[in-house]
Image (cartoon, rainbow, N blue to C red; front, side, top):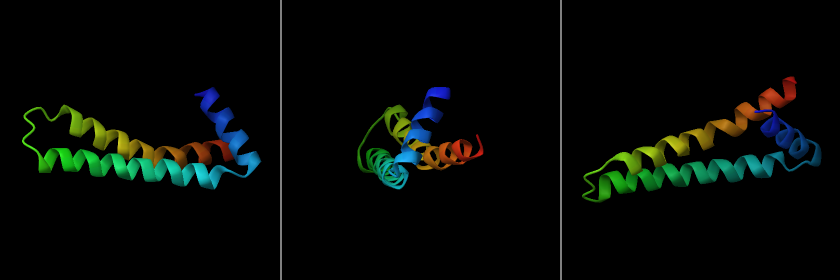
Length: 74
């Protein structure tokens, strides 16, 4: 966790935190949409892959905001 906070602090100091945050949010949204498409659009008997894509997408949507908030507090 310390390494992730150091990376976030370096990004915040360089001014790229907005760009990285939005890139991760877009990747998260794409992962959620891909998981929903696999779940709803195909005859997939095993729902592990769509569920993992949706969970990873939600983490990518929330994680940058939480990491930047923690880095600002530290």
